[in-house]
Image (tube, rainbow, N blue to C red):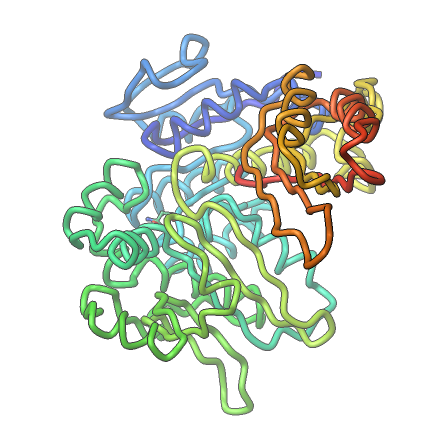
Length: 437
Ligand code: HSE
């Protein structure tokens, strides 16, 4: 089958990231999509060619309308951002019968009603997963995964830049302007960073979430918006004294009187998971009447996380162009004829770190003997703790944390430790996973 051809508008932070993801994961992507996906034509003014993979095989120009008019292109990916000319480009792409993928929340929040009407009339797809919460597939979750629910409310940290600024100021006492500059350098901030700071970007995203949750038209102009610039450090401290954290939240709730749509700094009890979402990470809580509260967490901005959502939309469109409509998404995510025979590892071939606890005689040389066995097996100790013996006891609990090691080496070491005269009974072993990404 011919490749699905993509026309890319914009090669900035997200556009460059999308090229890199489509290029580096091309094989996995075609195993999922059932077809190769190839960026054939791209338009950009400024870009860092050295940081973008796969540009050699792409026709490059600075005329985005030429890409939208290219008869070869099946899918237009709009990553220019802003209202205009993004709106005109997307409408022209639709008029030309092309499917559209966009990360442009401003465009969808303000002009989505018009764009979706045009797409329906033309029978093309407009996909916008990357427009809300960066790499978190929140649109798919609300629109598909929670489709059986009467959604009651949605509350989220949906601006990575703002959350990064608040976290750095609180944890490191850093200066607002200095952190904002770093967020810009890291590619988190909008072209106009006042959109992040004043809550406009979060309001764009909340507008979209409210429409998906409650089935209402997009109504950005009715969203109440307060930013983070006025948060005073003394209020952050006072909130902490009361057991709260201040987070910049977008909240939408359906009430008997209507729908609340509001973005503002908010005190949240510090024990809530969402109160511990820091840095550029986003989190969205969705309360459905059947499922209860559900939480979605991940990077809310940045080149590759946002590209992950853009590329997923491209794959979705490619599947709808390529596969049997009744089985658009393969049962096991990959096409049935593209499943891999990569082996599943037995547990003794798995590598993890360990917590070990043993009962040891309280006399010189015992710890050294245990440490010697671990060292011979190439296992390095991260921490060690020996508890005080209980009154009249000659044995103590010896507890250690190790670095990562393949399980069969740990099994051998544990067998040798258990054979020591100075160790009583068996060694308790728990696996440790840092899950730090
Ligand atoms: N400026 C946005 C943010 C980018 O910081 O969340 C992702 O939409």
